[in-house]
Length: 563
RNA sequence: UGGGGUGUAGGCAAGUGGAAAGCCAUCCGCCUUUGGAGCGGACAUGCGGAGGUUCGAAUCCUCCCACCCCAGCCA
Image (cartoon, rainbow, N blue to C red):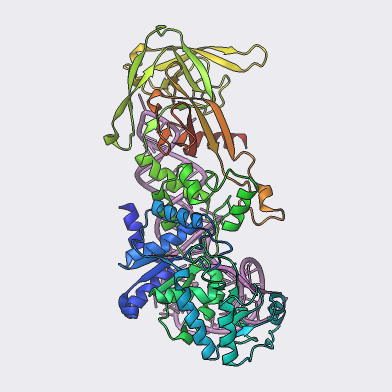
């Protein structure tokens, strides 16, 4: 409904191009895209944006999106990453059916094409070292100069390239280069490397190859082989497009259109495999799936829903402007989704003991509570009430400031689904002065939370029965960095890490209905936020992660009062 | 100072010569047994800047400014 409207109304420059292409019957109206991850790390939410575009557009236009692993560099790639990437894409809710491809499966064809370019006099074997190649390449403002090996005969090039393949030369001894133009203003066109010698086994090809094609010589042709119509990638490949086009034109094969869009950035985090890896290696976080990480596995463990991530991706749009999206939008999408689907429950994170003086010592009542006010079909549950309770420390102030509606000496409030209570006494620690216990009275006539005489109360508190509650550990997560753009300062981005990004609470009490809650289950702890059960949790010891707090109007008021 | 890009509100982002969409954030109301949710409202005489064309310009032209990317045998 709302989502549907968003997707059908959506307009962006890529869809405009595609609409135009369809109008002109380009590619007979077919739309085929691909998502081409390199299996060199875990997927993050920036990838989710790309996935949403690649798969989303294909779906929208009745086309296909292939999953293709761009695995032409055996030094960085691992099967472990392939498995994780597939799991994350599935979790997001996208399906590539049987169209799971690997650039490495095209190595034979790529080799044939390289031979073809040599025969056409468009490629040559170069003996220059990598340092020499760099020197010969020139600079941004100075043209490059031609390699002394540039004009070898076709026969010699053919012979040398074959011998590169058979393993006759050590790593780095020779490369195959495209013969384009060493004076080109676009540096990518200054005789780019097509093949390098790498005596490294490939995770899928084993020892079959000791020469590997570079990205530029792999990507476009892989697109071509798969019949891709629109090859969507990020902005930094814009400069490579002339080369993408060059190879395809010289080879005379199907020519997909490369279109570039800007990659996702989100405030208060970093979004690149390289920097994420640094956080893992430096133990700034507890692994790739640490709930503070913007990786899909981290977000999953944090309690994010795939739907909320997809909604977010739809709302941020697609454009060529480099931007930083406010993380508040992501959190908004999350809350919106969780609000509709997640059961409510009561939990006290910072307990303050409350004794109801006029409530019978051994009495226990099972009170009715609504599971989700947004969804009646989720039903009701019973919550036990007794003489000794815990409420949140924050919900009591001995000297309440203006606009503080919660409990205070002499004040009456409602205990959710239970009774009106009035605070009659405050017990403090003699040494520290800290409030350690409250004495209250309850009004038996207000059972369930309504006063028959119609009197109102200004606030409703959540609570748990002390003797029935289950103890739990709660991990409070906050933004990973204190700086909106951690990459912009003078210091290393790691110096802007938020020291309070994780706070572990061990003295929490949750209502008994949570007994046996399984990892992955999500709840709203009323008035606090959304939480999910961590994989570290067990029946003996429940562990919850705070996914996101509820919008907190009081916190804003309090902040404004202070200013 | 080579080449390729991008500038619309605090953050995203539509708009392609004919009244500056929408979302988040912020603020104000209403409602509420979650200070949640929901509902209603406010929020760009102006589109990086300056000129020009036109009855009419964010859209077309000229010049200027700012920012991003490229000198891997990474992708």
